[in-house]
Image (cartoon, rainbow, N blue to C red; front, side, top):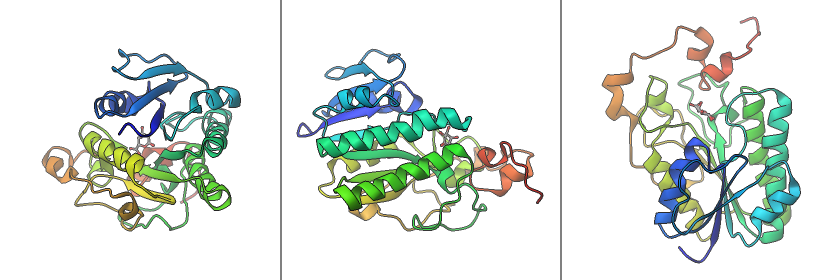
Length: 264
Ligand code: 15L
């Protein structure tokens, strides 16, 4: 694993803190970055650099010498557009510009909120039209399309993981279809770093869930095979639902209901 220097943005977030020690222990030459300090002891062999993704010069700095960036930084929830614009849209644009100069691969923590307005139970392939459920989901769709353009125009490789719900354990009925275990995310991220060739790839970031809504994607190119299954927790969670009709109707759940004003 020593051949590529790996940068993890968003290292201080929930998934960053889970991935950082595992990546370091697996032997990756690891640089961590976030807009806020790293709250845990920095794993042995890793370094931490504080940086704001909306600052192009700072992003160029943290990308110096990097062969693959795991982009988990930015805003992870629905927020007013100006916050999404700076952290997610300007942020990932700065990152791809730096990746082009470095000839680095980008692995992007995209989201199911790119397709949140498909109804639950509708089976989806990753090449179906985007149906973002807010500015957050729209910013993730922008990231995926930015990757498409940077590959077609500049040959920059990127792997976009459309993460469902990455939690230690599934906690509600929706997670029977959306759960991604921590182990499966870690395995996936390693495959995305190590794969010899990826081109521009979009993959569902979900475990091998019996009740999945998500089908064809580019996983064969990455060599990704999830091993966990939310069904193992069905007894505990199958009856845990909200009492909101919009939340329960759509794949994106509560993100769809936030600020919803269409006459249905
Ligand atoms: C996301 O994109 C969020 O970052 C995360 O907090 C969860 O809400 C997840 O989606 C989900 O849809 O469960």
